[in-house]
Amino acid sequence: EIEHSFGRPMVLAKLGQYIMDIKRNTPKKLDGWTGSALLPFVLLSEKSDGTFLVVGISPFSSVCGGEALTEEQERKLLPLTNFRQFFKLAGQLLGAPVKNICTF
Image (cartoon, rainbow, N blue to C red; front, side, top):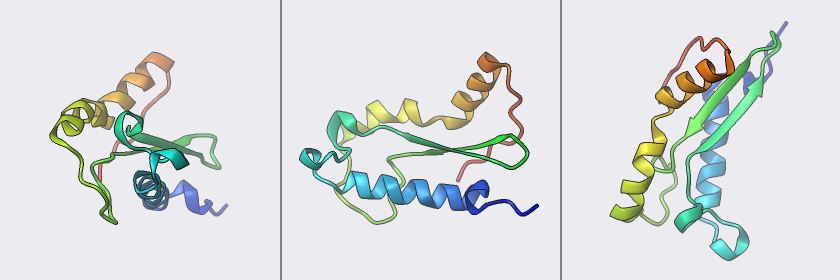
Protein backbone atom coordinates (compact mmCIF):
# COMPACT_ATOMS: atom_id res chain seq x y z
CA GLU A 1 0.00 0.00 0.00
CA ILE A 2 1.31 3.44 -0.91
CA GLU A 3 1.54 5.93 1.94
CA HIS A 4 -0.26 9.22 1.34
CA SER A 5 1.88 12.33 0.96
CA PHE A 6 1.19 13.69 4.45
CA GLY A 7 2.49 10.45 5.95
CA ARG A 8 5.99 11.56 4.98
CA PRO A 9 7.87 13.68 7.54
CA MET A 10 9.31 16.26 5.14
CA VAL A 11 5.96 16.80 3.37
CA LEU A 12 4.13 17.32 6.67
CA ALA A 13 6.94 19.57 7.93
CA LYS A 14 6.77 21.70 4.75
CA LEU A 15 2.99 22.04 5.12
CA GLY A 16 3.40 23.07 8.75
CA GLN A 17 6.10 25.58 7.84
CA TYR A 18 3.88 27.04 5.12
CA ILE A 19 0.97 27.44 7.55
CA MET A 20 3.29 28.97 10.18
CA ASP A 21 4.69 31.47 7.66
CA ILE A 22 1.23 32.48 6.41
CA LYS A 23 -0.16 32.93 9.92
CA ARG A 24 2.96 34.81 11.14
CA ASN A 25 2.67 37.26 8.24
CA THR A 26 -1.09 37.80 8.61
CA PRO A 27 -2.19 40.80 10.69
CA LYS A 28 -3.63 39.96 14.11
CA LYS A 29 -6.99 41.50 13.17
CA LEU A 30 -7.24 38.88 10.40
CA ASP A 31 -6.48 36.03 12.84
CA GLY A 32 -2.73 36.10 12.31
CA TRP A 33 -0.40 34.61 14.89
CA THR A 34 1.39 37.59 16.37
CA GLY A 35 2.34 38.68 19.86
CA SER A 36 1.01 36.31 22.52
CA ALA A 37 -0.84 34.28 19.84
CA LEU A 38 2.50 33.19 18.36
CA LEU A 39 3.21 29.69 19.64
CA PRO A 40 4.76 26.50 18.31
CA PHE A 41 2.46 24.62 15.94
CA VAL A 42 1.91 20.84 15.96
CA LEU A 43 0.52 18.86 13.02
CA LEU A 44 -0.26 15.17 12.91
CA SER A 45 -1.15 12.74 10.18
CA GLU A 46 -2.60 9.26 10.58
CA LYS A 47 -0.61 6.69 8.64
CA SER A 48 -2.03 3.60 6.93
CA ASP A 49 -0.68 1.31 9.68
CA GLY A 50 -2.72 3.13 12.35
CA THR A 51 0.21 5.08 13.75
CA PHE A 52 0.56 8.84 13.69
CA LEU A 53 3.25 11.09 12.33
CA VAL A 54 3.57 14.19 14.52
CA VAL A 55 5.53 17.26 13.45
CA GLY A 56 6.28 20.32 15.58
CA ILE A 57 6.89 23.64 13.84
CA SER A 58 8.85 26.33 15.65
CA PRO A 59 7.94 29.99 15.11
CA PHE A 60 11.70 30.61 14.92
CA SER A 61 12.09 28.76 11.63
CA SER A 62 10.33 31.04 9.16
CA VAL A 63 11.29 30.38 5.55
CA CYS A 64 9.75 33.48 4.01
CA GLY A 65 10.95 36.08 6.44
CA GLY A 66 8.48 38.42 7.99
CA GLU A 67 8.72 40.53 11.08
CA ALA A 68 11.57 39.52 13.37
CA LEU A 69 10.75 38.31 16.86
CA THR A 70 11.68 40.53 19.77
CA GLU A 71 14.14 39.27 22.37
CA GLU A 72 11.28 38.95 24.85
CA GLN A 73 9.24 36.84 22.40
CA GLU A 74 12.24 34.62 21.75
CA ARG A 75 12.88 34.20 25.48
CA LYS A 76 9.24 33.18 26.11
CA LEU A 77 9.03 30.83 23.12
CA LEU A 78 12.37 29.04 23.46
CA PRO A 79 11.28 26.63 26.25
CA LEU A 80 8.16 25.73 24.24
CA THR A 81 10.12 24.54 21.21
CA ASN A 82 11.83 21.50 22.75
CA PHE A 83 9.68 19.11 20.72
CA ARG A 84 11.89 16.09 21.38
CA GLN A 85 11.30 16.35 25.14
CA PHE A 86 7.57 17.12 24.79
CA PHE A 87 6.89 14.27 22.35
CA LYS A 88 8.69 11.77 24.61
CA LEU A 89 6.74 12.99 27.63
CA ALA A 90 3.42 12.87 25.74
CA GLY A 91 4.15 9.30 24.66
CA GLN A 92 4.92 8.28 28.24
CA LEU A 93 1.79 9.96 29.63
CA LEU A 94 -0.43 8.36 26.99
CA GLY A 95 1.26 4.97 27.17
CA ALA A 96 2.00 5.23 23.46
CA PRO A 97 5.27 4.09 21.92
CA VAL A 98 7.36 6.86 20.41
CA LYS A 99 9.46 5.40 17.60
CA ASN A 100 11.55 8.10 15.99
CA ILE A 101 11.98 11.71 16.95
CA CYS A 102 13.71 13.77 14.30
CA THR A 103 14.36 17.48 14.38
CA PHE A 104 14.90 19.65 11.33
